[in-house]
Image 1 (tube, rainbow, N blue to C red):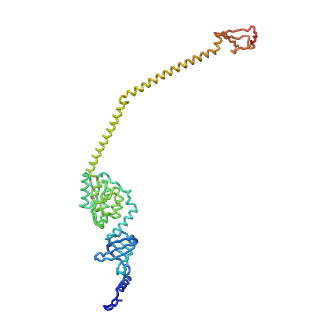
Image 2 (image 1 turned 120 degrees about the horizontal axis):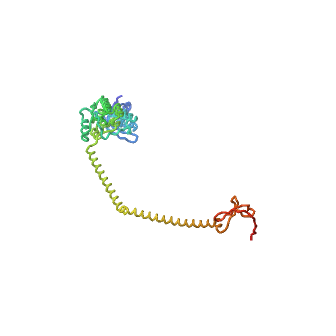
Image 3 (image 1 turned 180 degrees about the horizontal axis):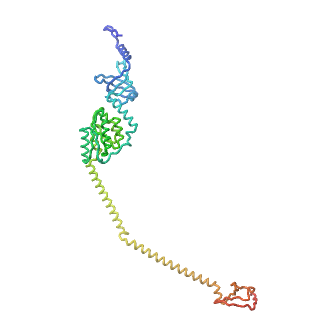
Length: 405
């Protein structure tokens, strides 16, 4: 019901504010498309200013930080969004605002959100694992290049590569670099170069562009084809700020096509300078070693033992002669002592020998069996007498006992 007022019976401002608040309160939650003009994040709550996409109209909005964090892609100032919000009217100051219940990126932001989800799924499969990256060859036999026909990217890669290494060979495959069929064309060219067996590395190059124009290089089929490729693949898509999913699965990511040329072949001038520098360092090292060893050899030769090497022989020869003389003296002395000992032992043996006793006039009576007769009762009828120079056979005539004194 319309409010009845007149110049004589005006309504107070607070009543108008209350009625507006009641009217706005009857509105349900609505979906709104707008641009984020500003964003102020505070603990527990976020304050935004949403601006119409065409007009200069803007309105305040609030939400809990969890709602902003739940968005499929980061929400930043300038982003185009679609929000599900309930209009609210603050009566004390008459300010209209939106209480956001859900927020989604729209347009380019939605594309980024989809790419982010695809990137997370492929990363979970391990397609971006750094351990799977293949190293680039130092000097490839030939380089496979997939790019657009007569494109600036093709010229950049070819010219800069040949400036760095004039002998580099290319096998170029032209493919669509934009549009729905471009990813399929790149896959065909990639497999053709891999099957040919003539190239050692493959470069996929394209100039910069919008997110939509670079979208084919985030195609899942192309990403999986590059992951399955047996040759190292260099991604040179767009500029430094561009980052399609192909950059993540490729073995090497080049920021620009020119950067790709620097990565696939070495600079011949730098390599020649490096070789010359290494040869110079090697020569200096050899000369230093020779000088050091020559000095060490001179020091060795200056020592007395090497200045007159015969001295060592003379000293050792004198030692050997002295040792021989000492050994001879020791042997002769030992022989003399042993000869004296033998003489003494011989004299002792001779003195104890029965023959010596016999030579002094004694004789030994022996029975026929050779036993010695010591008493009269042992005397047989016939027996032998042993003298110093022979023996005598004796017959017993008579015996006589002689008592001891």
